[in-house]
Length: 140
Length: 140
DNA sequence: TATTGTTATACTCTATAACTATA
DNA sequence: TATAGTTATAGAGTATAACAATA
Image 1 (cartoon, rainbow over the protein chains, first blue to last red):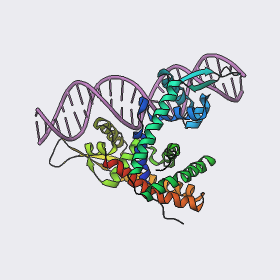
Image 2: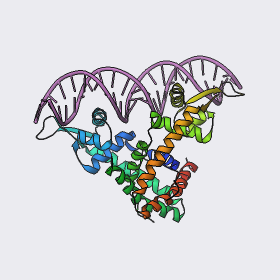
Image 3: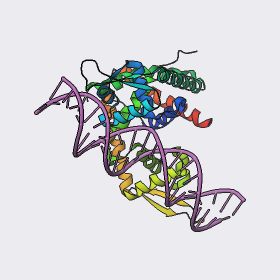
Image 4: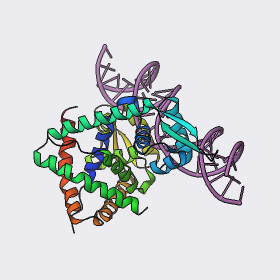
């Protein structure tokens, strides 16, 4: 069995990740939801709330703010007039692309300052972390 | 030069980390500040605000909420009666210890479900990530 | 009756501007 | 005058409870 790793570094990493992308002046919740809509395409409001792990009323308000800022659009679901489908606008997609470029560039610049061994260690860990996250999703 | 790693996994990792510790029913900002006070000891309100990367008024309010909940205590700085020193109470230290134990246990359980190679990759990346975060702090 | 979404209300978290007390 | 902190105000982000519309 391995020694328990010191996870405090992950707190600092989270703070760092939040600061690397600033385009569109989005808060973390807005950025995450918008990114999901770009990645997964238009979807029901409830589906989006579940995916982001927030309540349905919380998502109603988040979508309202995004809509007010012109980043998403609400449409009525075909076949069920209760349903709301949320989709990204061109402006929204643009903001996501800019933020992703900002973050990739900033992260790359930080990586470049490390030893090659550290760079490799981090690159190798990302797929493993993806499987860790997936393991969590598999057992809610 | 390395290929740009896919950083989207770090978004999911952040969401995961927030959910692993629930003791004391603290929000993220309260948990981070309290943890810093345990790790670094009593300190000036301004110092705490700078360390956490939030404004002085923001920290005044955060400390007020923590004080209301009995997790920290305000004292007057010796030698400068304008200054406020914030320190953790026994209850506050207890909550931090419980949260850390919760998170370590949950993370360990998730790790245990991965291949040994993935476990090693993650353990090896943590010190490298610590240096990445330090590189950021070195150039504000 | 059950599902989808919104509205109402409250709390955390954060910022900027204006203020108070001390140095 | 400059520094340390607080108060006032506003907005994002989140929750639960109550409601409306549709299925």
